[in-house]
Image (tube, rainbow, N blue to C red; front, top):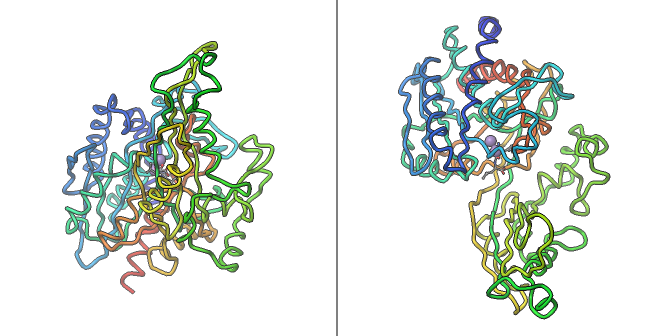
Length: 463
Ligand code: BES
Ligand code: MN
Ligand code: MN
């Protein structure tokens, strides 16, 4: 590995600058105003893969944003690693809350990143982590030390539900044949506490609309005598959970995986401080489902959360009005073995059942996703563990994450492949938030650790 590590340290500055350039293109997949930039980012990723030494580099058009495919098949007797990542990013707003412009990357130290962190939308999620794979691949190519075949599949719609990637996977099963999927789009506990994500939550996402009177009304002339849809929506949302913060939707927990006491005790071994957690978020107290710890609440238990709520007058000053309509966007994070469609149905039935006769309600489902659990006894996990053991000098801890990467379950269904969630971000990196950043340490740690994964995967595969 010393050749590779020399190559990485000799090219450090260029590796960093190339990422900064990639971060300057605002590839916001959700907003069509950025479609040209999103397409340009795909072109850029293509160019970088060609330069790194990949073959068959192709921009594959979809009904939405394109997928960049590339490969390097050195020997069909060797195992193949399929790298998945995404070049699209979340919208940057609210822009006012950024300390520096989201698409003009700057490097500054933070408490968790004393050696500097790259501040930009997408720095951690997922351009920075995706690009580690391109640079690790380049480093293996340029030092003649690639031990496996590689395929890349870098998409531009992860942040909007990966709908077209599902179609691409179904239509390209042969092209995507591999032995394992490797993804860096998750995190570690801390820079001195490596971990490997072994669980992702699923998702049901709905939008609700509550309609009262057929027009906005004077709140004095009509107030008290007609249904106010905003008041009623709030009451309905309050009925989604009971006083123990259990979700009140009938049937919601029917399929929830119950962990054994041993499994929960194992989870509780991961280092965690409630005091530091509160301090980092400026909270005077924590909140959540009774009977579960913070780490259980955000990983092995399902949730319901309002992501946005609106209606009526929200401009400057006061306007006395009863709105005709109120709206909310609601997400439910799911755990094994909950089914996203079933949960959406249960939600819809319950939401209709608690609506008073004075309003009309409408529920519109958005995207969903299936939960995922990686086994720790397959060679992909073992290779990831040994790679981190070597590069961090510590055994990584398996952890279940609260986030979702819905396409991972589809990879298993359609390609029969397990995914190794080999992410290097920190929870404090503020992904999806203003001032998203990614540690320079983490970027290079990833570039150094990925070749070790390849090495051990090839070794264990051929054993
Ligand atoms: N990379 C994240 C998911 C993630 C982050 C998982 C950290 C585990 C740890 C991904 O880009 C993401 O944001 N996923 C969305 C789901 C999607 C359907 C919009 C999410 O989890 O909200
Ligand atoms: Mn991501
Ligand atoms: Mn994301």
